[in-house]
Image: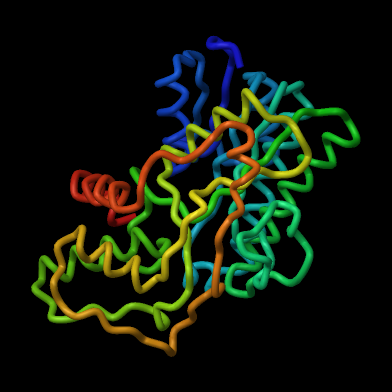
Length: 313
């Protein structure tokens, strides 16, 4: 990408989109296009078509999505599938119709099968059934990835996709029921510390293994791939390291400074038993993560403390 190229970041107010904007500005890109949801509803096909016809962005980072944790996914299956499929199809199709040089689609590691080989290589996509707790979201993301691949194959476009592991960091969603596990834990332990609660109860039994990537590390990879990768197969984004939810919970409690008892509710779902990405492809391209988990959690907690209104989203 040229430093003055016209670059559209869809979803620039979200955690991933805002990190991509930070990375682009840091690297000297000067011609960034953004729109808030009020300014451009990506689920409105006519509005998206008009935006692309007017702005003609040369490069697109598609980071906009309807996201949430297990409870949010389970309570709004149809919404998660419809909204994500509509917005990504609108953006990708309009980008193609208006001569976009390159588009990068942001997915999620939840696209891989529930019982995929560990660590999960990009090639295991669609080899067996998905995890039921986020099946709707995964199907939508797989559709976006495949549409990029099919445009490449049919029309010779240069559209790529990247599949991040669990993300966290600045501008995260700390909603008490609709957030992902790490930000939810930050909020829960902070409130327990503030109220002097004797214990905190967490979902499941703490046994699932998870991998976490600091969002600014992902953003660096996104810009790197836009400049250095072309291909139909997605690229995994992660650390290649994992820990149990129990270990994560104890680490968050330590960072926040909560010293009470941690209890577990095994009647609540655990989700996928293990989700570790094979990141050898990204490494072979010349990229690796920089932020270790405890350091990243400290940065995320500082962001939570400095932006209290964000916790109400």
